[in-house]
Amino acid sequence: MKTATSLAILILLLAGLLGLPAWPDQGSAALQRWTLYLDGLYLSGYMAVGLMSLSMVLAMRWPRLERRLGGLDRAYQLHKQLALWGLGLAAGHYLLRELVKALRRAGLMLKPQDAPAGALEWLRPLHGSAKELGEWALYLVAVLVLLALWRRLPYRWFALAHRLMPLAYLAMVYHSLVFLPRGYWQGMGLWGAGLLLGLMLLGSVAALISLAGRVGRGRRHEGRLIEVRQQPLQVLELRLKLAPGWPGHESGQFGLLTLDSREGAHPFTIASSWKGDGELIFAIKALGDYTRRLPQLVRPGDRAWVEGPYGRFVFADGRPRQIWVGGGIGMTPFVARLQELAQERSQAQGAEGAPQSAHAVDLFYCTRQGDPDITQGLRELAAAAGVSLHVIEAATQGQLSAQRLMDSVPQWREASVWFCGPAAFGDALRQGLTAAGLAASDFHQEAFHFR
Image (cartoon, rainbow, N blue to C red):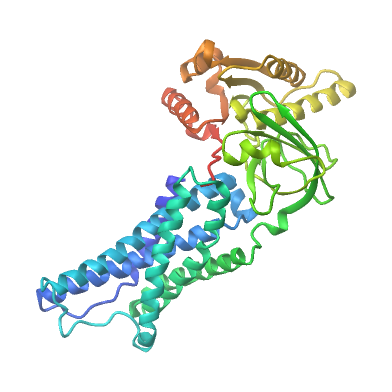
């Protein structure tokens, strides 16, 4: 995602430079300083609204875009990074203007009498409203981004506050259109103008879709809870029956589950493989305010909505061996895949004898202190699926390290690694394995942070 962010910034920087006004010969130092200030002001504004436009588009959950980016989790990571860069540049744009105003009041900088105007003259009557709306939009975006980064804020309040973002974005678009300098309407600047106008058009469409509450509506499916079971280790298992229309899912994908319209949708991995009967299982760990209260809030018969399926953590690659690492509730996608493999293996044995697996698989179940019933159930399921299970209990055995993984699976160089669990744990494994020679593209990590 860092590469995609850097590429977007670079493209917008080059396009923004193309449209900077061609100032007349600068005969005085004061005029040179003033035009340099205008260049910085226009370029920072151009890049800010361009990055915010991309961020708005990524929030739409469009399936084709999600697949191209490697899953909705990664699309949302990129969405957040671009929004932060856009906010930073918008803040720099505003502070630069305020700094120059302060310098002018103090007599330390003068606006030359012959200073050229950058913006289109016929839009001058709109300058006052565009300045005011742009300023308030910046304040609102800054508050909303800070709320999004504040992990202790309950998710429902984060989701509610985030619905104001499209309004702030539309105000930024209005500000940018009014002040887009004339250099972007002529010569090479037309390339920069075309790119920015296209991004703002897409971003505005996305903002209007969001304000209308239509994001993901075409992939939302209604159902009912048919079973609610409290499992060991503070895990709540919900079994749903969906109305006809669910397209099916691959093991490892997730859905956006809504159990209360006031709370909104939460992303949870689907813990069951698809059998075509309309039933889904979600295994939800009590990790936050909402998930801790969930056992008291839901009952069989309650209505539910599932949007999806999303995600590309689907165990698809060309490697002869796979290594799966699940940390705690991160075992969920692997359980779904085990169910699928066990079913395929059972059908193949009944029809043709011993089946041939596409991959040799080693599964590491990492837990602080395991529950005997859960561990035994995993052993039986792994045996039925033809998967080698390694149980790592941190309380007695210590945490799994990259070196320990390599020692346990000597053929690790032939494998792809699939990790789902705490981010810091996954990052440590990734760094250790890639430092030892594993290709970065062979380490797949579910990036389940949506804010």
